[in-house]
Image 1 (tube, one colour):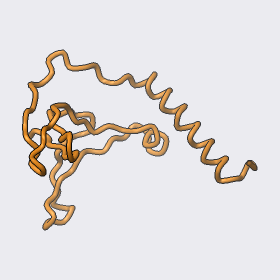
Image 2 (tube, one colour):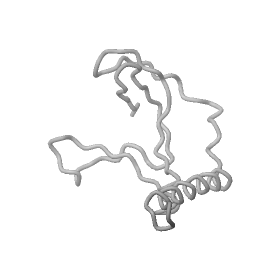
Image 3 (cartoon, one colour):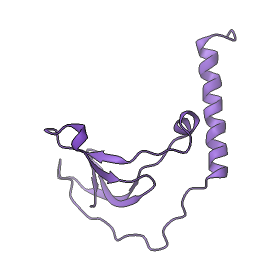
Image 4 (cartoon, helix red, strand yellow):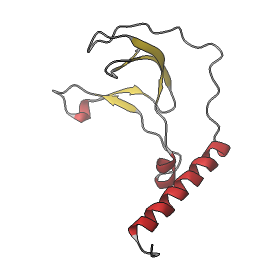
Length: 113
């Protein structure tokens, strides 16, 4: 592979991404588990009726996001199909956690309000 070869560049970027992820994990430790976790969120899947696993959702950044943007996280938004994105509602703020459930059959995620 030559120095200007796209494969070489991709390998260099991948190596940098891994290094950034490693540095990020040392500089910004993941949040500690909540000593008082929320009660389980037991629901049936609204899409297929299947069983759901109770858990947590969180909007978080990635190593590539850190590399290109820095310490910036995006919130989670919702808007109806009939609305424009300017009428959207903020559902989850960056680094906020919410009780949720994920269907084991179809993958639908339900977030508790």
